[in-house]
Length: 220
Image 1 (tube, rainbow, N blue to C red):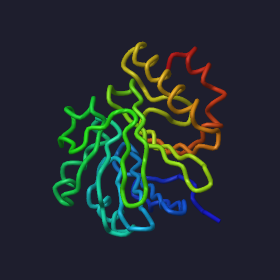
Image 2 (cartoon, helix red, strand yellow):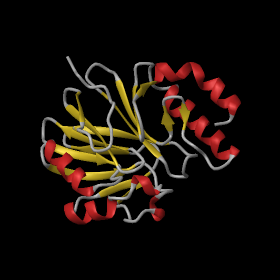
Image 3 (cartoon, helix red, strand yellow):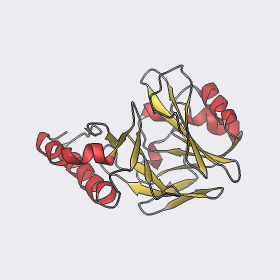
Image 4 (cartoon, rainbow, N blue to C red):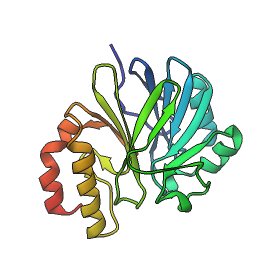
């Protein structure tokens, strides 16, 4: 039985979830309590880091907690609190980097791979789907994957949290983000889909789905 809760704190240990062919580690870093995720392909040991937010030494330690073999770094969106360690970590590891094409030019490190909606990222025997969620930033992305039991998992950056979407700069951006969340996340994925956000605790689509109309009405 898993002991994973998804409840992590800055300076605290990682929380580990065994998903069969994939192991997910979650850790919080930095002054803004940013979540960083390390995904390990259990068949090959290849690893993918999602959001090199801060504390590069802690993130190197996180990689070592897994197999020690980092294969790439993905940035969910361009905001500074999610990329604070990106330049140093890229320099130290030499691994390829990935980001949404519409956020790529604003990053401290030009990504090796510019991602569009519908793209995939493969590391080891694991393939993730790239879901563009336009609104929090123009090129924000989520990563989704289904385990052997068919349960989906979504790393959503700052586009979806427990209680609603991430902050948007305008009503038009809010409408765009809600449209993408509904059509690209809530409609194709089941209620048991586990959501791993960029800050704070995890949630599920089933817990959030009843509130979609409420979010639309309140406008944030």
